[in-house]
Image (cartoon, rainbow, N blue to C red; front, side):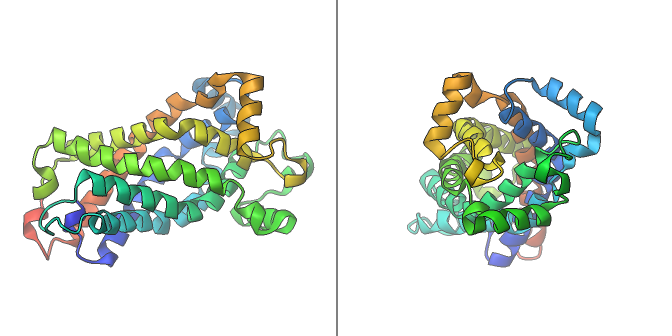
Length: 303
């Protein structure tokens, strides 16, 4: 897909469309994942049933405004940087050919690290909102958390920029390697499912859905323990009363008190969500890209 790109604008727009599709399709499962990670017990179904019974179905979309507002730029930026860098790492490959798998992995790794600067504060706000429940809204500060802007103001007022970027280090570590694997698995899988499609751009919807879904599932499995630690660090309210004091402390205390299984709590929900979301992201992205390039290259317009 990368070799179809000839301008920043079209890659950027196509990536934004893909990101929006991903957020809308997988947000309820993401809410369940966050609740599982920050609790001591509970299957995905039990969490789901409890949330629906006590807070209503709309609570599964609580906090969606933050990632939805940023995802257009974030996902667009990731896909554009990835497409550009995967080429930069393979300057000896002709423009008519797709980049090598090495270029794909390196481009994805750098893109993942860069996007962490945007996604870290967004996920902080999202997690704070997702973990609210109507049963605790009358306790202390939780009573007046009215939305993403209110949460951001509270964090900034009490902790400054350091609070806004709480969890940045582990987010960079999580996203750098997982994005390299993410794009590599997608390119490799779709070529295996549809030989020659990386060059001729004629992969089917089925190929995009399966390859995108597998890419999302594999990348999440590879970084899931890091994501559990990140969720717990970002779920804390204030640095002075924080339960965990850094990545290593969070990891050690979580394992000591709850066992190694805590690092994989909610992984089933996450893998299911990842398959759905990333199948949608890559399908919408590829389709949008071909529509945008329809006038420039009719050979790649038909999906």
